[in-house]
Image (cartoon, rainbow over all chains, first blue to last red; front, side):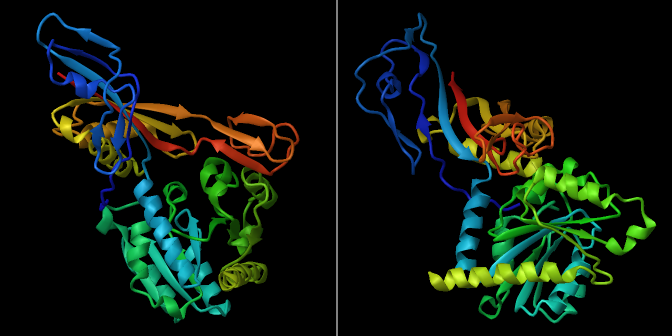
Length: 290
Length: 116
């Protein structure tokens, strides 16, 4: 896994406890009631000490210094920074970016095949899988540019991170498209955590899964802007309670639009495509207004 | 599921936070704040952290994780409450217009070092 290094921002906690031997040359440096830090180089630059407190002089020369260094940084800072860079790049190119997530086998790829064939939007796709180029091969059949990302190169990751999207997008002609669809790795847990610089997120749920998926994976349904309930052509053969599933989705994200579709028969596709076209249109209008 | 990646990121930030003039110090503790909605399993994170910090400046450091509850505020009636289960509608007026105030944190707060 590749993580670039960013300098940490740090501040010293005001109260510092230490024990030091007499005449220790460390004393003036470490008494930092009003100490300040250089945040870029991580170098501590204490102000002249005016008061010594919290200081004990040990009888022997052994010295023990304990201190707490404030860090206050998001662990996923690096990803968030890269996501912001992606977002800026996509805004400059007037591209609406959609992050499509779901559990494995819910029908993401089939939905995208049909969507790309019918949407009449200039599009490209970045597709993430741990292994194989099967999905990319299928999507390429629609005639749109496709970039396959296999995450095993990045440690078999369970999600696409922002830097992966940035690198993959470099392989696309961004001036030629209005919509970039990212088909994330099939997983309802981790992709929800990672901002990739997208404008909207959709989650695909299929009626062959449990109705209570939203309750089991609440974060995924919290972070998404719309849900697709797929494989509705199978409903006559299943005991699936569709109303209950929609109710559970709304229990997690009360205002979420839910599109009931069958990727096989394309039933229910019109409202979904209209939603998507609207998103792309709104971004273009917004960008042109700027 | 991606705790190893997170542990590596934590170790990298913590190592970079050791002041330049104290490179021989022992890091005793790394303090993290992890929200209940952050999809991170503390036990798994501690396990990964222990493995990847072996023979580094962070070797033996305790990964102290403070779990942050999911607190929401209703935009309609201003009620604030702690969400314990997967229900994100206002517990008072049932509105769905809800703002999450905390629970998605994944922050490294501080490191504690000792120089002996």
